[in-house]
Image 1: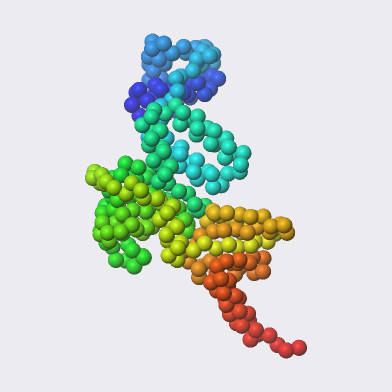
Image 2 (image 1 turned 90 degrees about the vertical axis):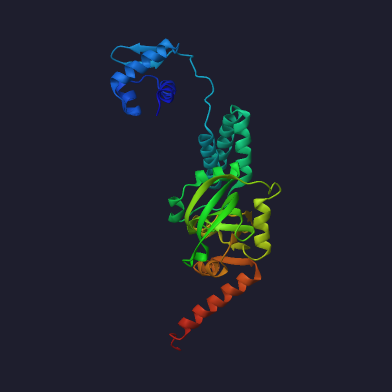
Length: 320
């Protein structure tokens, strides 16, 4: 941390405390107490009204506040991403407070950073709740920055996890989280088509200096809808009994797209899946406490699986 950033941080630290000692400031910034004294003296010379109380500590004169803090693009993007994730797990009261706070933050940003966040909002989607441990090995910040700045990515990609690595240049258009994984939506120059790349299958990647042009009308949501229409992603509507609703929500590998409460207290939950066999095996564990409404393919799959289980154990039954 350079000295200017430290001096700014020191004012914020003082502003957030009624009183603080030089030793506590030194520990916070990992500097010596002597450096703290020099910094406090420099701030006083610059006109910051710092009050020193012998044997007590330092504080700011009551009524003094810094001008609005200017966030970097990385800080603003981090706050935005935190808000998008929190929207999926927070209750309504926290969501409203979060939206209000983010609105206030955005109001003090210069126009270029507001434009950056607007482009980021159109390129990022958090659809599902939980991710695998593989996701944490990748840094989303450089990739999301490449999406917003329209910078090409060089990928080493293991398609379908078959161990065959291909090298390709892609033009990143959006990031989406579904089916427990982060996905990069991009134009692939190798395949000359829009593609969906799972981040956990990246063997390596690098943000390039080259910027791409075009794709102004591309929509991540429309792309996903095409995958749904093409049976690559499938929506499913499931009726969940009230007594297992909490368990269902906590174990569900996604955030529901829609929920409707029925008169009997059960809830119809709409989700997306990329694997009907996996969803079948998961729903089977709920027995009669869940019912697939649609699609018919999933109803048939669950019925066949239940009959197969029943047939396996019917051989052990002894006639009375």
